[in-house]
Length: 154
Image 1 (cartoon, one colour):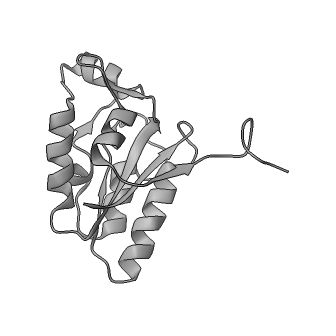
Image 2 (cartoon, rainbow, N blue to C red):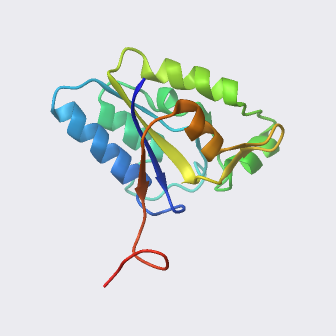
């Protein structure tokens, strides 16, 4: 499957905006693009006037629902593995890959947005990180970051 994996150096660095911009730009060029995000947490604490990540990405595709974009959604604004554990949800690589394929449907390209940084855990048992998922889908990676330690800034 063709596409991109958008990750970041952490939470709040612009992954969703970058992913949605890529989806929008490709869609404007007439391509059918799907979006996917393995998990979304923080539904209990929305930012006023700004959509949740899976809603933003679904809107950018013009054809997906937020539920198609992200198979695992949680209220608390915590790491997906904590949110899943506290809700009794089990996130597995197999479940994510099935959801990823279903989300892609008949799209030409899929833009996948990670959760936090690459080392964010998605599950404890068996251990599963965003990096594990990124390796499994084997897409080229785009990194969103902000100027600061370890990056070039003026």
